[in-house]
Length: 395
Image (cartoon, rainbow, N blue to C red):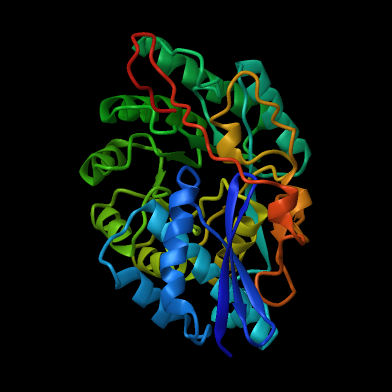
């Protein structure tokens, strides 16, 4: 069996790769470089010049070749590598007639605990949406911003005391509304400086959050370690990291309790499993990062099923526009104008907070025919929030 073609399929706000073989088997993968998908598409075209004519089942060899060939990393390149890797695993599963999780290791669990994306532009809306998630059977809610999901077009300003105290009080209201039966995965979206993050963690700890995700920008590993050392709440981070070595440096510093592996940007199923194994040796659990499409979701499930040190999976609302659009939206965006469900052949069901594993060979999911024509690609607009004084705000 040989690779005869690789097609780049830009669909709506997503980028897919289709690897085609001479055996009539093809595989689908997704790039997670959501802000720079055009650049990621070009990286796929470069990798294509190597892959044509190769055996698709030599997955680790191809991973190492693409990862090491030009000595450069970055989200666009690693997104391309990830998409190809996922597609190769899809081919392998179809070739051997089993789901990927059975091919790599055999499953460690029969179903996958998930947390549901919950947002809100006001405190009342946020609390109400948390109550709805519990009513739908979820035992955990995430992408949960105690600072609210306000439009990025609205200038931001709050005093330090207001920012900390109102955020903590929102968590109190949510905890009172859903009780201890529901875990709260707090998404801080890099909004804070190290001292602010520690102060917030110490005040919010009384409401027992599952973790605090990305309290600061991820660039300084020593700062993240300092926060983890002073925070009574576990820290989760890693969604912007691309390599095993970056995660190892975090682990060496005891900077994380939960590794947020972006399967579609950290090297695909191969890369995510490598990171999971390194994390396992350090007593750290993985929480796959997934603000993307159902293709990404199913790839994350394959990883979650096949590694022992899995904690919980992120489950975005696929009945609407992409999460990456939703949380960078303007005041006028119609968030229900597009359903991702129309793009694909299958989406995992969630029953009582647990996602059902795919049972068909490979990924267990495919794009509908001519998806790229039915749902034309649109370049992502830059939309960064500003402070009232005109400076940049992380959100």
